Structure formats: C-alpha cells, structure tokens
Length: 287
Image (tube, rainbow, N blue to C red):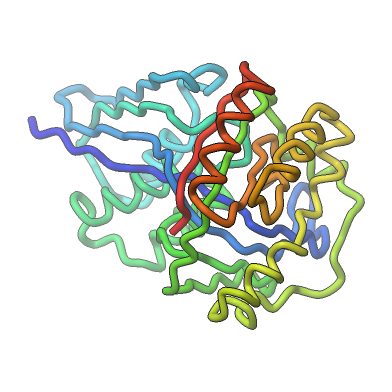
C-alpha cells in the first residue's frame, strides 16, 4: 500500500501576552506566531488491521504517551464524527522537535495529520468541522492548521492569518527541561490588560524589528522561577553579536534568539554548543 510523508513544523511564539483566566486551566491570550524548521516527519500508510498503529522514533520520542496522544485523539474524533469507518493506518512519527519544549510539536503533528486526511481520505470534512475537531484535540491545533504567520487577537478565539513572510533568523535552544503547560499557566501572575495591535507593525520591517524587540512573553518569569537554569540560556543568547532579543517561546522551556544576519546566527549556535554542550539547538529562518 502507498506510503505518504507529511511535514509537521515548529511553532514559535514571538510574543505571548496572557490577558486573563477565563475558566479552570484556560486563559485568553494574545500572541504573534510564526513557523520554522526543524519539522517532525510523519509517514502514513493504510493497513489491513482493525486498529491504528502509531509509532514514535527519533531523539525526542521519550515521555510521549504511545497509547493516548494528539494523533490518537485526532483519529478517535474523526471516527466519532463518521469519518474513516473501517479504515486503519500505520502512522510513524520521527520526532525532531523536542517534546515539552513549547515548540508545539504534538499540536503540529495533529494539525498536519488532520490536514492530510481531510484532503486525501475525508472529502466531506468541511473547514468548520475540521476546525471543531482540531479544537477538541488541543488549543494550539486550529492555529497550526495553516502554516502562515498568525495573530491570536485575544478576542473570542479570533485568529488572523498574515500573508507576509517575516524571514527572521532564529536560534532555538532546548535546555532539556520539560515544562508542564498546565503548571506554568496555573502559577502565572503576569497579565496584560489590553491586546497588542501586531498588525500595526507587520508591514514595515524596521518598525517591526524595533517593536518585537521590546515585546515579551508574560509566562517567562514564571518559567524562570520554576526552572532557574533557563535564565542563563536567555541571558547568554542576548549578549551574542547581532541578537535583537531572546526569550522563551510558548510556555517553555525552549529559548529563542532573533538575529540580524545569518553569520551572527551561525556563530551564536557554535558558542551555545560550547557553553551548553548537552543542550539541543537549531538554527533556521522563519516563514
């Protein structure tokens, strides 16, 4: 049977503002999101069994629940809604994105799988139902259904897609710490009163660079309080040549640095590897 391969990209929160807590374990956020490499590789092939076989491999396969994860949840929800009846699959995920890092690996996997199945196997799955299923899988999943720079406005789950590419030089460092999103948000005491108007700055590169440099992630102080080692990584990235800014992405623990040019980016990664030889790092260009 034919095999298909899907790419599942890294999610980056360039800015993240927590506006308010709306109900238990749920918060209203305002964020500017972009995407970049590395990506997880998902291989899917129909099988003749009466169940899906989901297998993880790669450096970051550890601590992923093999029986209940974003992919298995997506498959269950599709079948609950009347799709893929009597169709089962072998699904293999090579994990290149660190798990529990705030880089959205699990959500990105589910979004990529849902997109693929909606186009290839579930022709009657309309956009509204696809979004509804994605929401049930996880908060980030609807956001990751499109690989476009995205604004979460903070108004009733409104998502705005931006056609313009940012093309930022990005360094990502994972300090081998798995952050619990639930724990970070429940301990957070930092809130922003009003949403940020990201659209105001997007179309002017100079204004955007100055603006995003002074932005922040409201969760960062909570993450550092719970995991002090992360502050050392952020501080080290910040002082590198050509670095505009450094902060955590998502609810951590991954730290990002945005650089003025590719040479500075490459040099910064070399220095990171010397300073923190046991930490994973990657360099890329955002979408």
